[in-house]
Length: 428
Image (cartoon, rainbow, N blue to C red; front, top):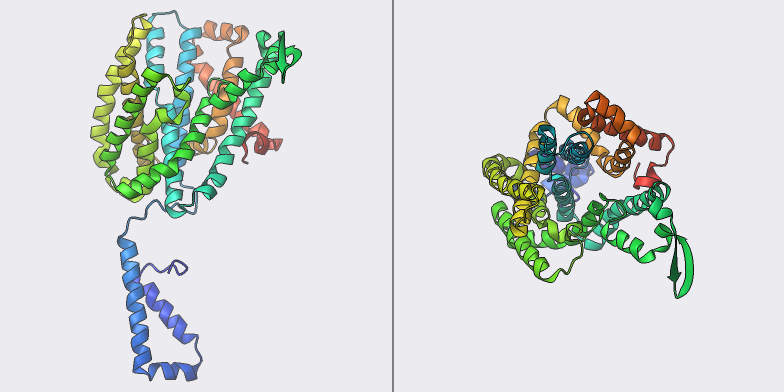
């Protein structure tokens, strides 16, 4: 049945008419003069119609579209703007404002409020990959398709940022003694401290933002298990949401007492709030699109309550007070995951607006490139000569992120013109 795309009774009837007409006249007469033959055709048609009817009633189970879905590019476009805002507000508070001034507090709180950028991207990736797994459930082929597209740009930009540190960081240039397989060697610190470099690769610490790609790789590895759970348990959205946070809480308590993971924020287990809901949404995509509007108010309520708790703990940190790690991490997890789902829900409506779609869709298509490049550009714009000019204009918090995005887009275009984007990003 899968080979014949029959979705309505009319298509089935047309199929039978075409099949009969393609026979020679003598055989057609034999067929129609035979009651037994005609009954057989009638039986076959009724079976096909029944199968089609059942398939139409079934949940599409995340059937991926043949063409690129603008909705997801819109969501990623929103996500990358959140990333840029999150990073630039933090930088602007440090470079262009007096500590504890009105501007400093505003920028600092905006930075904290936008602490949900990574869950947005993880949720979108989980949804897209879960939709694929629902139609192509073979795990190894899934890994072969998805993992190289993340690993290649991660490793490429790990090397890029190592080179940048080698050029710009004097500490990385210092000649220091080391050893390899027991043989003494010496060289620049960044190049001969092999164990440190290896740990940077494992945990995404070559530069501060690369941990996200490590988390994404781990999320993709765990996703088939999450999708299998959703198919087996067939839970409701809120059941999955509650399960995710219960599991996340257990992981946080375990980490607190055992410290098994040196960098928990660089581990996919710290983002179960994106993994499980993403698997459910991808597996029940049409249901999600139909019912998501009913979940907006409960999600907004969760965001409001947990956002207040999270910001209160962040305020304690700013004032040098001891923060409750359980409350801080727990509230941030629910806050960020709920907002990520709201971004996806909002993208359904926004993608229907042509003007908004034209702005956000290109940003979403190149979100990976923007994500990888912009921290390097941001560091270059921190140089004293530039910050002095921005301080004179008093427009640093506005002009600096705008210029950062403009330069980043310019570099993306340069890589495309020079045909190096395949080498740097694993895609073109």
